[in-house]
Image (cartoon, rainbow, N blue to C red):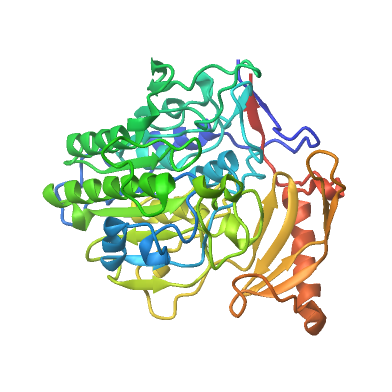
Length: 479
């Protein structure tokens, strides 16, 4: 039996009043998300205004600079560069967490991971996962007749009730958590490769995962070319340990890390070529981004986030601002750039709009509809009045406009190292993207305003450093 619980050991938030089942049941009962009578899944596919397809390619630990068109000096990414030339770069695009599980929860639910009580990384021994009461992008799109597939790393719970096939995906092919989560000392089993809910390989042959994921995506797209589809492709790489097939090994100037990225770039090219061959270019929105910043402690096996500060595991920009490219022939302006604040959480409400749906109205959804920004509408601005930077259940920074306030805190350090004190600091990201120059003394009014936003956020989502539980959090699930 699945129980809904808080995943934070130090918090027990209030329960959501309306379940996912009730929301989806209302839609299935003949009422569309627009409040109009529902139509059969195939009613509009043959019309010129057919519902768009969505492909989300989500890499693991790829840094802001680790794409040619984002400034990489030594990684060759011709397919991604071409995708940017045919689409739109987002240079102020953020994930909602600097680590795996919470970042993925935010993308699929459109919510801060604290709201859905998945603020921490899950492990093979974890008995918790995404709640059956949450509504994922896949579930939302299925109410509009979409075929859905998850291909790659899931990491929202590996036990049966938490797998993709229980949360809106028609099929699943991939590994259930990170590729380094195998330790005999911790009694963790070899990394499994799964199809739907059964193990195909154990240990998974990681050298060919990127290519096999790409082949699965192409197979799914081809099989569903005559109906709307959603492909969620969360790559295993470049999370360490790095693996790549022989045909890509030793090709990059950046060593093995570069080889892995260049293999992913090849896969992007294969998918884009397939869409073109099938005549789906004008019907398909493709999004490429990463789940968090680069794992800098891995040195040559980690990426780069320059000119941003720091990387994975931190709430500086290098940990949570990631490369993002979006392409939709004829709908997204070619060779363009958006510098407005956007987030993975925005994909759910934006996809809902484009598919003729609406996000569930019985709960808070933190993401916003960013279609005007994607379409390059004149004068379009970020819909976010504020953006919050959490690590786990600890609120560490708040942003509004170009202003970002780092909140004072004390951080524990490994081993016998004494705790590190982080002073309050204010940065103007429009002038100081690298977060180097604290200007708080010159702008006390801005500091006061951002501190007030931080307190409002604590009351809503909680803050473990202040022993505040948060009134707006919903329950995760555990066995």
